[in-house]
Image 1: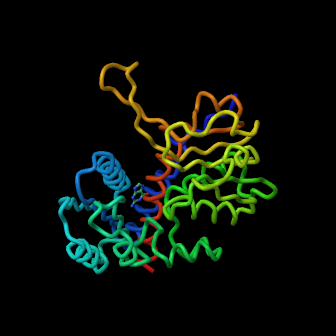
Image 2: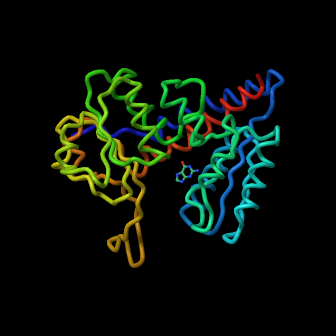
Image 3: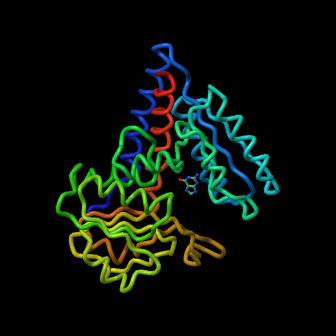
Length: 293
Ligand code: GUN
């Protein structure tokens, strides 16, 4: 039986440190940490994520501002809002929730956020710092940063000699996750939808990280016995067993099948998800400290 990694518990300890840091900054005459979250349109899942981010920011003692824009917002309107937030000294972190409605181009919006306020770590300056091994100077994407904190709980900081396989190559997760694993001395394979014989590639993994957005795709025969499995997926599936019209959240890993094989595994919900929000708060307070000089 694998150890089920308690992401909620680890997230609480990160949040406690963030609260202390935000309080200490104010106590020494610094600013109140400010986070602006921008959401465009009506996607219910995105609204749920954004509400929990805003709620947690308040709990950390931050000034939390949420900008909810209608689905028909133009590129120019969104760019203008980001420009205003860039120039607002009370705002230390800016997060534009993705995906944006299809008529909007996310990339120029993300690249227009000042790198020092880019708490998602998506600006090329932050992605570039990570890629060149500068782990302290920029801001790192929250979900991979959170996944690394959970891995550290199991393996410590040095992953020398371990094979890590990341399934998924997104800018938001897969690529930065690969960079972080590499920086921790793991031997990293980036797998994706075009990888040949994905199950065989995964069976080499001492650390298997799944971020594909396909419910329960990773099966027991993909998992090397004794591996650590990090499930980044959050998928809503029908759950008729809970009653008519009911649904439930599952990850990209078939948890009941893989858990007996893994030495350690993250659940969904309660694994990586809470860590994403905790690391967003950590990035925001770091940005506030840097702004205060
Ligand atoms: N959509 C899903 N996850 C994220 C995230 O971490 N940041 C942003 N901006 N959008 C998301």
